[in-house]
Image (cartoon, rainbow, N blue to C red; front, side, top):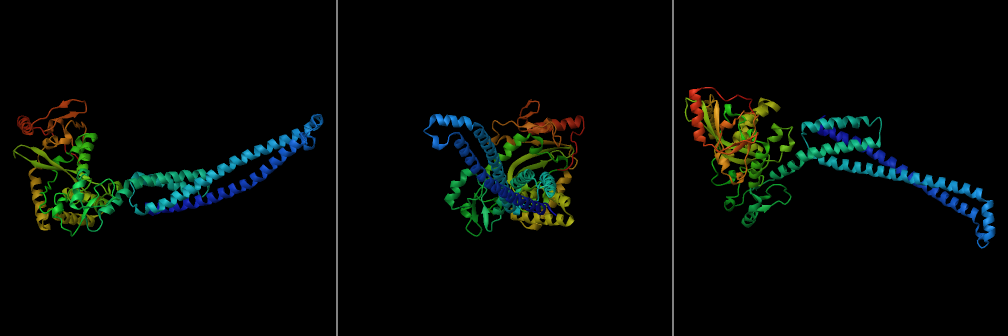
Length: 479
């Protein structure tokens, strides 16, 4: 039984327990209400008898006789008063018990209602994150234990934990999938534009989907004239799309990327600014997420309906006799998962083998060739030729031991004004301060490293290698 089926079963069991308990508390509440009504009548009758015993109405005007009567029947009146006090205590207890029963009934009704809504919510859920699966397994064990002891408190607690798990799961995947489903709306080309360009989109006649939250809601329909929207369209739909570079990360430069060697705050600032510039839509196709994320990363439903920031690098080796190369950041582009994998087909195939088999790997490889051809307006054969040429370029750089990482173009971006990124001393690729050029940065000790010219840093590194050839690169696992 998969996680969703198990969750449905747990919801059904818990709902049945909640309904039984709700009926039980309703019956208890009604019984208490009946007893309470009788007790209140007895209390009132006893109070009336006690009052009559002390002050008979017939002696209302005979003050002396009333006083004598009160002395003679004081004992009887005291007993009646005690009896009335006892009834009053019972009434208070019944009221408290009835209130508790009603609160418990409402709690069970709330549990039933929430579970009923939850049953509808899980229709869109498929692969939960591992941590949520583990929590759901614990809750399932607790629900199974309720068969022996249907304790109301335990039912409420189990329901609360179940709701927390499903809400977390839903937050990770359901809302994103709804957005992703909107992305796949038939015949729509989503415009990857920032909020500041919405007036331009409206003026040009773009349509809006007001149900879209957290992303550009503007689109045009496939088949209508697109010329007037050309500057707003995703690149793959433009008449003359910008040329794309599908440069593969060199074997000795794996993990040498900004989000790996810079601190998380710096990277979050960089990518979020870029996300906002495209309305959190893929600059290439206009969508979010894509079709591959559920196949290749089934344990990460939170990635469905999202976009990613891809770093476009170029690699060169100025002197073929020296194992020092230049790794230059050309640009950052916002892409969906599918388009991102077009730049990392080797990673996509590795993910396919991890979650599936060679058949899935072949399917993914063919899909990426087809998608890349569509993005570049080229034939699939041309794409395969370019991929083979890139493999040959990889061979030319296989023995480069040190890469000078040039971030000059990043430093020139307006959003980097006043921002000084921090280099992590312990990063996956082992990038050192002596390898970074073109940008001012800090190390984790707070020391400022001023901007270094990349050509000069390359010459200094190459000279050191000539005088003392000692590799500075440490091979790490592929990302």
